[in-house]
Amino acid sequence: MEDREFVEPEILDSLAKIFKLPVKVISEFNENSILNTLTNPYDTSISQERDIKQLFLIKQVIKLYEDRTFIYDRMLKDNEEHTSWVMQFIL
Figure 1 (spheres, rainbow, N blue to C red):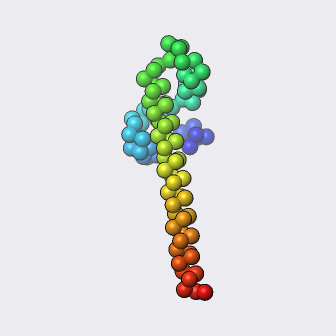
Figure 2 (cartoon, rainbow, N blue to C red):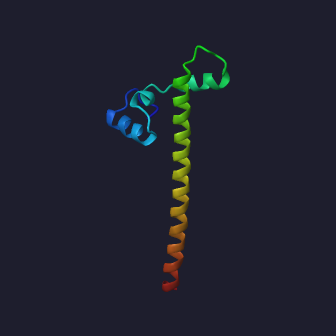
Figure 3 (tube, one colour):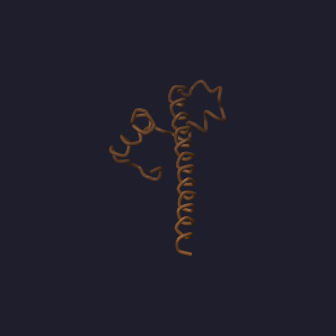
């Protein structure tokens, strides 16, 4: 999605619902603004509200990634348990 110049409205709506953010915040997300905020925290020319929303969005993406990783690990473990249970009856 980050390589696209245009993102379909349906995708933006879905992301907005997941992150509980307005579509405008997601569509106007600017990576450079976040980097500028992190490297120059006292620069008053930066819109703090926009940056706070973008940082919130980044935290949500990180949380979703961690949740996905946890679920994937759990699925692998369940699959291994199921496989070993089935193998008991085969062997």
